[in-house]
Each structure stands twice: as C-alpha cells, then as structure tokens.
Image (cartoon, rainbow, N blue to C red):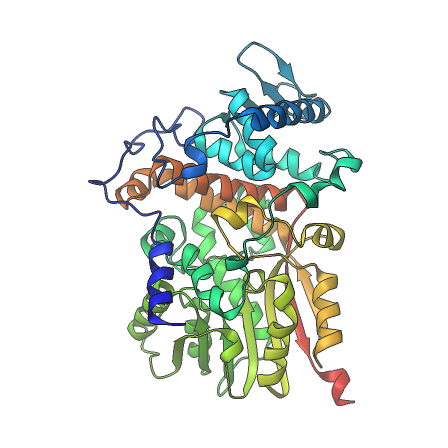
Length: 459
C-alpha cells in the first residue's frame, strides 16, 4: 500500500472521532431510563450523512409505505410488542415481552423502505425508535429472519438491496483500509468495555461458574485466558514452537504463547493494535520472543509448527477464504496443527446472503462475512491438504461475553463521550453489541473452535 493510501486509511479509521471542542452536539452525560443512550438532539450531517435525515421524495414515500405495511404484517405474528405514538400496539408478546417504541414511524418506514435492515439500524441511531430491551427486540427478529419477508419478495432482494462497494472488497489494496475503519478507531474506546486482557472475541467460561446468563464481569478475564489456552493446547503450542498468529488483536494470545516458550510471529493490519500489543509484550519481557508485523496474512513467509487465528476469518471475505487457508497450508510445517476460532452462521443463510451489503458492513466491519462450518470444511477439502479434525461450538459463551461488554460500555458512557464519540456513535455501538448478542441468543449465530491438521494427507 502506498503512503497516500495508508494516510487515507488512517483518516477514514478516525473519521468518527471528534474532539469535544469540535463536537456539534452535546454528549450524553445521562442515559434514558431504559439504559439506552439518549436520542441525539441534532445530528452532524457531515459525520452521519445517511442518519441525519431520512430519505425523502416520491419514491421514498412509496417505498416507505410498502415497507411499513410489510413490517406491520410481520410484527403482528412476533412475540414482542411494538407501540406507536397513536396508541396502536402490534405483536403477540405478553407483559414481559420486549418492547419496541416507535418515536417517528414515518421516518422509520422511509429508512427501511430505502435500505432494508440497514435502515433498521440507521433508524435506531437517529432515535426513530427505542427499546426497553434492545437485544431482546433484535433477538425476536433474528429468530424469525427467514420469515420476516414473504418468500416471493425474498427472491427479489438481490435486485433491490445495495451490493458491497468495490472499494470494500478484501483485495490486498483494500484490506488495510477496511481493518483500519474498525480497529483503529481508538485503543481507548476498546479498553473502555474490554477486560484487562484486551480480548475482543468470545470468552470460554467454566461450567462451574453457573448459568451463563448470570456470569459476572469478574469472571471475564479468566474466561478469555481459558479460551486462548484451549486454542494453544489444541495447536500443540509449547516450548520451542514456532507459532504464526493471524490477527494479533491487542497481544494477549502472543503473550500467553511466549510464556509457554514459543516464538511468535503475529500479523495485523491495525496500526493501533500493533502499537499497544508491542507495548504490552515489551512490558511483559517477551519482546525477544514475539514479532508483531503490520502485514497482510497473504504476505507471510517462512515455516511454522502451529498456526492460530482468533475470529479473523470473518474479516477475510467469502471469495478469499481459499487464499486464507492456502496461506496457512503453505506455511505450516509437516506435522503442524492449526486452531482457529470462527463466528459461524447456517450454511443456507450464508449462501443466501453472501452478496448482501448489511448495516454491519456499512458501519462496523466493512468487507466482513461469516462462514458456515460446512464452508470451512468444503474450502479446506477443495483447496488445501488441511482437514477439520475437531470442533467445539460455544455460542452461548459469546452471548454472555457480549452481555458483559454491553453492560460495561453503558457504564462508561461519559468516558466514551470524553474520547470524542458522539451520541449517534454510542447508539450505533450499542446496536452493534446487541445485534450480535441477539444472533447468538437466538441460535442464528454460533462460534466454533476448529482444529485442523494434515493427518489424512500423510497416510
């Protein structure tokens, strides 16, 4: 990547950060009674161009009316309650059901009519609707995702909804920018809601900790280390192991591998993560054991006894999964093992949405896409000598992890505001955390630890 492109990527990654002096809107010093960031009084159209105003014009009005009818028809069958300003109440939910409160129903309908589920997220960011239990509302939608839109209309979705912008495809010239837009927002932002290990992936809680729905913050750091240790164990990482880590995060896995006596080469495309990971590694005394390189995984050379990658395949992109696994296959030494942790989705939904452009792409993870277990098995069988030997699903552990992140994020609202993130950003981030938790709670998403090796090829 050229210096100009790197500068552009850095600027894009930090475009959502504002200083308090420059902020056009007051930051939320208080939250609503339901714990949701207060609806923004005004929205900066330069910072949030498609949130500041709903779509307008004749076409938007027609699309909004149609979307409103579809939405009302769908929620009438769902176990939640949708309250409208005129007193209308829709849904089959009882007194304990999650409540979605419409504030500006016309704006909400215009947004979903124009942009589907992207509009659902943007309308929450704008304050067009509220929820007493945001994750609960989104869980109902996630559990019914296959039936929300009538089947005949689902077949037309590809003609109507937006496609992934070419500049967000994960070709080598785009990947740095895609990663930067999320991970280079601010190390301080991530530290505001992550635990002391700075692990940004599902923890693995001990079964003795009781119901996962009630596990507390004090258990998170140890559960994150347990997740890492299981991956290192499965990859056979110990004294003298040459370990490749694809996706550094903030360095916790590299630290724990180095403590075992391994030599670690870790690659990341986030300059913010690289800086903090190097700082943590040096402070722990492992600078001579760990190299953190600002490098695309495709450019890795050398030979490694083990390869570990935690929730990085999601950022690779559907069309690049063969290259991802071929790279691992190319650098893995004879007898080596691979352990990855991957968020997965059902195979049918994966195929149906592989060309879709979603709210998560637009605002959170440009270029990302979740694999299915079947896809991982198929890609490795067709394009590599690697074979899946073992896997363990732990989606309920991710739901618990996300709940703790959400609670922590909400409790640090003033700190996040002082970092320069406005109320629209805070509502966006809360929607992202709750949207993700809803996926795991509904069973629509899972997270797998997958172990691969070449035993079959060596017979």
